[in-house]
Image (cartoon, rainbow, N blue to C red):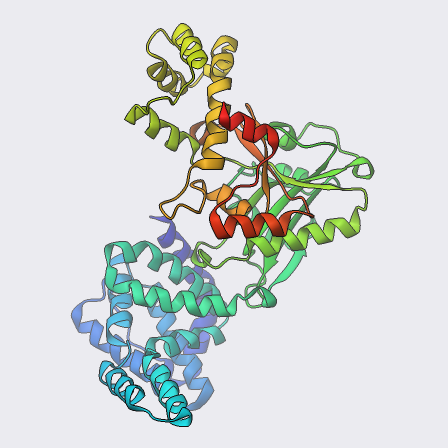
Length: 471
């Protein structure tokens, strides 16, 4: 069972009783059971139910009953049946093309400001597909917003294989973007006293540094740590995005120390640095709807009020695309990738050509335990990581190639320091050869850094990172 199927199954179990009661509260909500694969014979009954949802007959109670029945039908379908459900919604309930064409002609021939304004309004109304009204009806149901968030997560995967679902996914993204405007979100500090349902979700959604049970979670919520999350009023037990913070002296250089449950408790009165060591987007269905930058700014404000002595706000971040990028350069045999000194050192320890040695050594799971190998690798890997973070771009020539770098640079941070052997977990070694990076949020430079990066892709970096990148 894939991730989307698991999510749907969990949601169905939770909603089965609630939505059954709502669907049964009015005769309009009674729908014959559909076969899981949604064969053609059931498809027409489903179409009739969707049309009934749009008819608005019977008032608010009937509308909620029909929406609940439709939602339960969707969640009961197999993967194949859900594709057919979504395809019907996308293809059968789009804009009326005849009405759109007529409205466009009327706009083109409109004379005078009043007539043009009226024609523009009529064109906007014609372009609004009926499926948007249908999707909006789920907003009134218990956990209906979460249902739509999960539906979009499924659509994002399916639309690659089924391009016809793209317009439906775009409609749903537009709805969610309006509902999840940052002005509607609530920032909460998560503590050991937070509801168990929320703590369980934090453990489930942590994707950067997996939480190893309740003791590990308690350690991350201790007095020298902070954990903040954004919530939506209609998803009170579902964190949207959350950040984990360590209050320390000086800038942290490796995540092993931060996550060590046996490490002594830090003295927050002596802490001068807040390290954001894990930021997680918890809802896949909200991808592309950005509020992470607002989270960081709100947390910085909150910490600044609580701890007047903290002057530095920085991250200890992964470099998730580095290994993949480096192996691509090695496979292509990029000229000049390594310096003469690096060539010499790698050839000596690897017993073959420098690029071949570098590729072979990284493939060895125990290279970190061999001091000579680690010493030979440190120079080229940290230099190339600096180049990757400060120079490598996406096809648009502006955005940083690395997704985490793009996120922090967009928010006005600068690349402050690259840390060797900073994440020795299997994931850390596979993604970035154990390297991590500190992004510094210098409060006086955030706006200027953001403007320069957004306008031209200029990456703010410390002097040592710039020098490292130049080799």
